[in-house]
Image 1 (cartoon, one colour):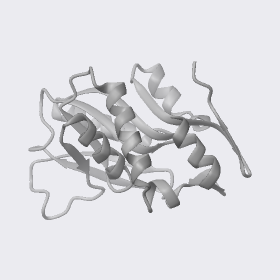
Image 2: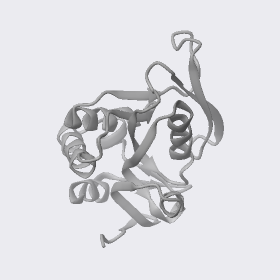
Image 3: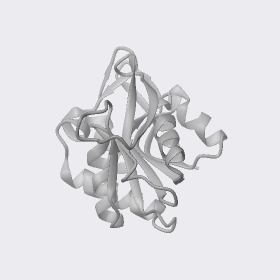
Image 4: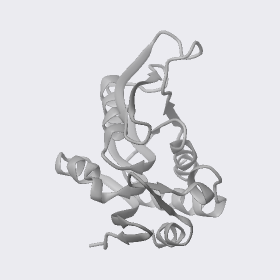
Length: 192
C-alpha cells in the first residue's frame, strides 16, 4: 500500500533495536483517513474468503482490526494480554513473547467470542519475528476456528517472522513490508 509506505518514509523514525516509531499516524495518534484506506485494502484482499470474525491483540492492533471489520461488516475480537475478572472462566489462552517489550505474557480470549467453525482473519499493526501472530493462530486453532490468513499494517521483513509463517502455509498480506532499516534509511520490499 503506497500510502502506508509514504507515511513511514515521511513520519516514521527508526529507534535502536530495530524499533520503528509510527506513533504520529498509526498506533498512538491515528490518521483516520489512512486507517480507513488500510481497512478498505484489507477488505479487498480478503473479501472473498468467507471471513466472519477478525482477531487481533490489544492494544495497537485494535484500530486496524476495527477499520477492517467495518469495511468487511464482521465483528472484531481482541485477545487480552492478561486474564481479567471480566473475561470469565471459559477462556482460551496462548503464551506469547513480546519482542518490543522483551517479555512473555498469556493472551486470552473468551470462548464465547471465538468458536468452532469461525473463519478468522488475524489483523495486527506490526509483524516482526511472528510471535504475536503465532499466538493468535494458536488461540484460533484451540477454539476450533479456521484461520484464513493474516493482514498486517507494517511487516519488518528483515526479521523473518512473515517469511517463516508463509513457508508454513499461512497467507499473510502486509500493507508495507520493510526489508531494511539502517539509521534513517528504510527500504521496502518490491511487490512481485
